[in-house]
Image (cartoon, rainbow, N blue to C red):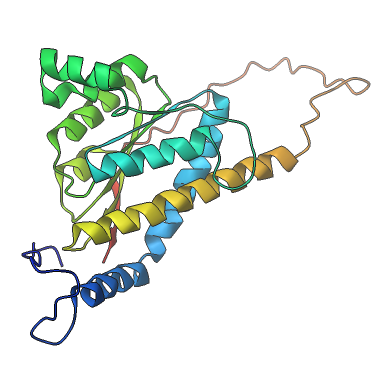
Length: 247
C-alpha cells in the first residue's frame, strides 16, 4: 500500500470508531511490516558484509539524512566508529549532517541542495560507500548527494519509504519500506541498520579467525612458463538499482 493517509490528530490513546486506539494501530502497522522483512534482512546482511570488506581496506562510510533520518544515519556511523556489540578496531564513518559550521556555510553560499553533495565531493573517494536515509525518498539534497557520489565512483545505498521514489531510483541499491506511517518506516530503518552492524561485526570476526595465506614458494619454486600470457577478456557489469520492498 503506497497511498498517504491523513495522520490521527488526537492523542495516541484516543479511541477510534472501530474501538482501536492510536497505539494499537501503530503496533499493527509495525507487525505487518516486520512480517514481510525477510528479503530486506538478507540485503542488510549483504550490505554489512560488503562494508566489512571495504572499510578495513581503507574505504570510508559516509551517511546523511534529514530530521529523524539524520539521527538514524548518525546512529549507523557511531556504531561503525565505536562498536555494535563486541570490541573491534575502529573504522572511518562520517555523518555529513553533523558539522553545523560546514553545513551552514554551504547552504548560505551554494543552496540547500548542495549541503550534502559538496561534502561528498570533499570527503568521498572511489570505493567509499554513501548511505542515504529518507522516509519520503524525495529529499532534493539527498538526491543531489547520490548523483555526486555516482560521478566520483562512490557506491550509494538508500533506505527509504514507499517506492517508487527519486532517491531509490538514483542510488545503486535501495531498501524501501511500503508503509503509510513515517514512524513505521523509521522503525524498520532502525532494525535494518542494526542488522547491517551485526553482519559487519560477524564478517570482521570471521576474517580475523582465518590464518594468513602462505604465499611462500621457498624449496618448491614454480618454473615460469615461456608461453606468453594471453589477455583475459573482462566482463563488464552494468549498474542496476536493486530495491527490496517491505510491506
